[in-house]
Image 1 (cartoon, protein in one colour):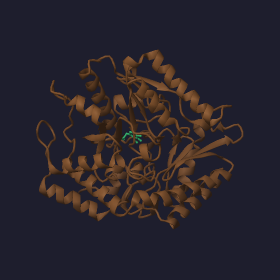
Image 2: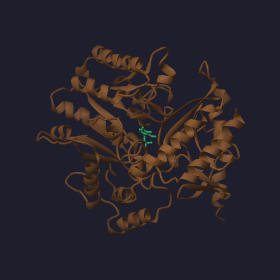
Image 3: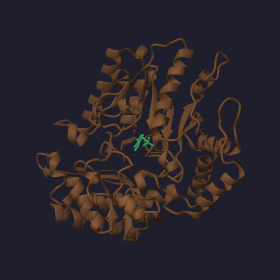
Image 4: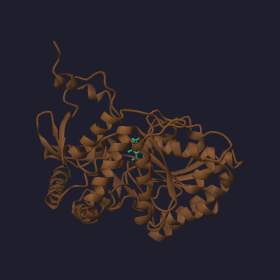
Length: 447
Ligand code: PLP
């Protein structure tokens, strides 16, 4: 007799979960089984309703259970379930989505390579730049500058670009990456003003380029706001300054907008509209389909596309599911919904209210810093606010607050001493205010 699905889920020994304490998961009740979702809410296996305060995993931007999305994906599958974009094959959905993404992307970013995850989008960016530099007769230009606190994914290359400390440390591509200083002013700024800290970061970038040699560096990669590193914005003006240094040294600037694009900061892309610069490559995923299908995009400049499409050999890079028809259909419909409903514009108001509400939590004693912007926020808990002394890891304060939130009907994401909030972008004012109330109660209970 078939076992009940919930029984299987509760005792699951076969599914290896991501970023999980696999040993702890063996204990009864360690898992939260999410069975259903609609709009801004999810429901667990007991039917308990919870606000999805993390938008799935910073991705369900238009909200759950949107029937227009489901119909578009189904219709696409009925018409063309699968075809590749290898060799000279293409299909209407991938071509149309590439055109649409190019229209939305800033400046000269007009060519799109699709993958199925943010990790692959970042790997593809570096693979493309290696190809680009080989074509330009500079095969030694391979190194990547990343930053402490970064998260760029979990493949070997993407994890090598991620901050040290996020994994067991060995990745096949470690030698390819140098990590610059963390841009976290509140934690790393010491006695400096924010403007002085910015200069120190730019000095570190220039010194690193001088030491490694610009002729050996293909790219600088940065999230507009570091996400999984604890929601860390850089000092004002940082991205533009870093981009200018890169430009002067023939180093391509990759903006990892896997989280920040598609409305989370109030614009389709944050690089130009929020941070005032047009990078050479933007990588994105998550909000591109609002999580309804796995899809990523590596969007490259006309210069890069011109060089990699020169008539001297093939572009030797490919993924079976690059531009998958169902994912492309999801992307097109997701963008159409966002445009029709003015979601990015709405976020500039609702997201600002969310940000301001959360900033108000700073009056609770264990809250050291509230940071981020709009619907991408982090709250860091500290043992001592004056000295910024952290709680030891085993105090698990982030986890305790997340559990206290869940008990009250809000899913939030603990990351060490930081609690991350990145809800769907369809939150209305009462929901936003309710999140603030739940957070205040939950943090006060743990404090
Ligand atoms: N880049 C950033 C900024 C991310 O936050 C993530 C995932 O959270 C990734 C890349 C990796 O994306 P994926 O998990 O789809 O591979």
